[in-house]
Length: 102
Image (cartoon, rainbow, N blue to C red; front, side, top):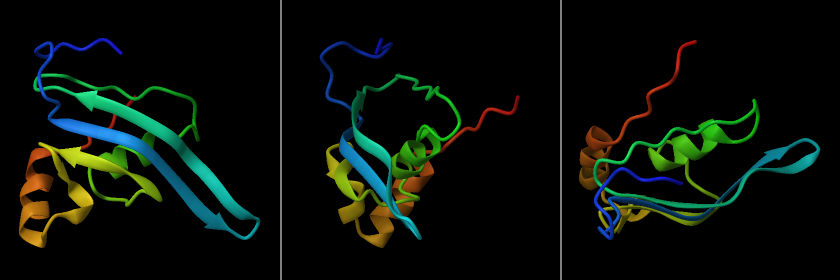
């Protein structure tokens, strides 16, 4: 991944070993398996892939709209899934998903 932010900076957002599974009638489906990345201030991330490849699931976990089965999402060093309601509300004002409309 090529970054546009400050080299060697501490990441503003970090995804560590994210896994997300969904229960179905046929058993568990792994939608995201071991995704890790770090974003520095000023970085822009585009998730590209085929339909059903987990792009939206990764974005929803990063935005805090979906909890990972395992792994962590950190914003400014803090695990978003361990934030208080007030901290999480503030986080949600800083992080948004922008969907492409073809």
